[in-house]
Length: 108
Image (cartoon, rainbow, N blue to C red):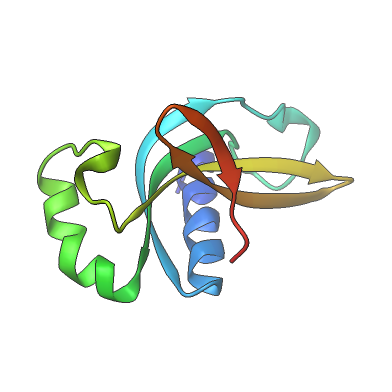
């Protein structure tokens, strides 16, 4: 598994820790200077769907079959995944996307 796949897996595990399922939609840039860290990850901001277990069961196939716009599933959280380094600790944040407004960091 390459460094980017490891990063996405780390994000999925963080979502799982909060009882959610993360489905990657897109890379968003803001890449970390990964040469400074020995964790092997290729870190950058992401966007995607942050689903409950029930939503994953209901919508996962639909999401994978075609591209959806943010408002197509109004009860589903479309999020940006951002990161920060606190010393050598990589912190992951989920920010709920909002139409025509800045994202809001979620408390899970």
